Image (tube, rainbow, N blue to C red; front, top):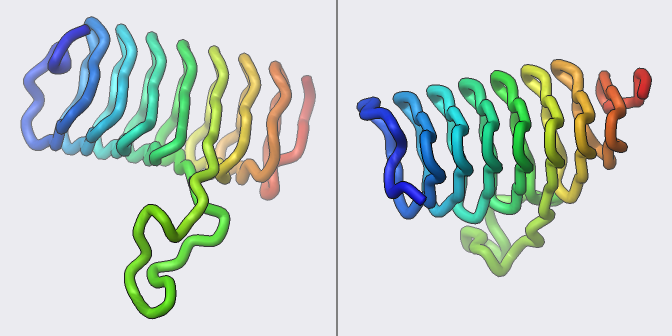
Length: 161
């Protein structure tokens, strides 16, 4: 495993990241406490949080937000502006104080090998997106997507298999 990406782009935060070989990370990214597999490219203005895992040969396009609890398999395409959510009932405070890790339930999300997430898709927490599934642009994924299935809309519904 490499200890840094393959390029020297300026203006990025990289802390405690495990990189595979030949990873490219563009400018204006925040990566911390995550894992990124071999031959993956991470575009500009991307944030990948602590505990997230990105597989090998993935493309993570600009403005994507990949939060704690997200596990992305190999050969996944995450298009521009895709957002993952990991909390069903987000709040700033609990009993009048700022929430911390013990005040909410982490909902893990899995994106299986070869899936594609279209621009602007929102993936709610606790979801599994199956192998080679396609999530259409702007879709809001509120339940599991079967392998090979195409889903579109808000909420996302099957278009075809």
